[in-house]
Image 1 (cartoon, rainbow, N blue to C red):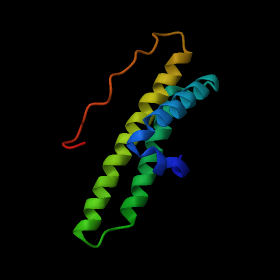
Image 2 (cartoon, one colour):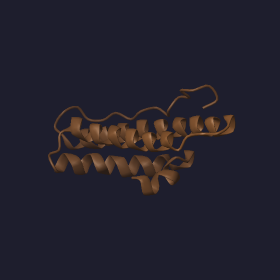
Image 3 (cartoon, one colour):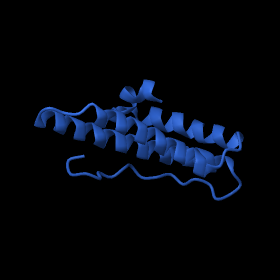
Length: 111
């Protein structure tokens, strides 16, 4: 996951993120891994990444601003990754089928 993170943080990578994480959800379903554990693993991955970023510290306000911009990108990526993983997982089950989601609305001002 971390190896592709830089590429996936780009806005134009949404299709790649959707494809990768839909497939991940389907794989985890076929492996009979509970959805709660799949989501928990993604949340732990995000937490580990963020703890690493925070441990790097910052010396100036510019460093702080760059760190906050990175945090926003990372949170948005993991939100999409979790959504697509759950969609892929659900698409393999016998329950209600996935419905398309509208384009992601801007959550943050200017974002």
